[in-house]
Length: 416
Ligand code: GCU
Image (cartoon, rainbow, N blue to C red):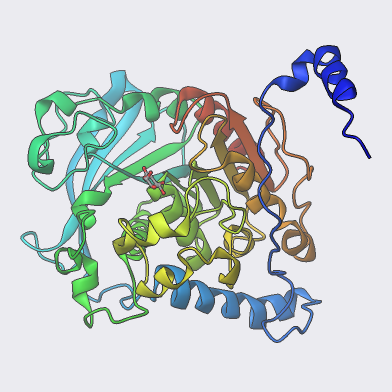
């Protein structure tokens, strides 16, 4: 048959809009069923999920992705109150600075937790907890937060030489931490710097909690595991604070710290709600959907975040035994909010949505409403089912708009 060039030309002229570049579709992929045991046995009851499938998935994530966390809560863990300022933020908040001393010593491994508690609320408050990239002093312009001396990243800030914090960084990330808004809605807030826990560089495990136990071997924790462990220690502290409702602590994180928040929520069921801020691949986004960052990149230059085994899946995502949807399923039945940026192609925002959507069956088995849509929602539409989703126009970032969506979601799920 002759090729119908005439028709093709006519079609081009008739539908000029169709000449716009269509969104490329990923090659076909298949996802492992969260409700099927590795040997194929279907998981049909909440009890079977809890006693069989959940532990099986946790050990797959430990062995193949993040590594095993070798140290629990240290016996010597100690909390020291370094400051209590009752009239912080124009009287709106009580501000605490708490040293979390991993080995009990002021001169040892530690992190400082910056805590805000709203003064206009009596009794215990729900609270958001997350790590920051560049030091607590970058999250607020308050001049009396000490300039830290620990390693900071600088990636999203002023790129300080040798990763040493400088005054120029003060408040530089305050737009990502809208404290006054969060406090005015009756929530507390706590943050610490991941670089104080363990510097984000290859071979720095000796400088962080991974050195508190046996030397990590082939399947043992990477840096994400170490940062995640620190979030659990922050919750240990929050459980001792009488103003905090420790049964209503939400853990959040942006980007690599979003991957960390997801793994923390999966591992530590004390967290009541999980917020993924652009956690991308290696987080809630589906790696098997070959859009955005490949495993080769994560397991290569960023390999220190993960278990060494993860490298097996470079250029071989199809072989991954687990993906973002199973990480999301490990959070069930607790509320999970997935925040994406429309232009954040590297994280694959649609893949982040699908990570949540494909955890739906587990959420429903456990008696929740799962996710209310299976179709990637339009920007600026908050999906507020137990698996929630919000797509912000714009790039890889966290803005006021993300926090507004988060607070609306939390009002529904964290306060009940
Ligand atoms: C890199 C990395 C991402 C990660 C991001 C971040 O871009 O490839 O996986 O989320 O850094 O943490 O900022």
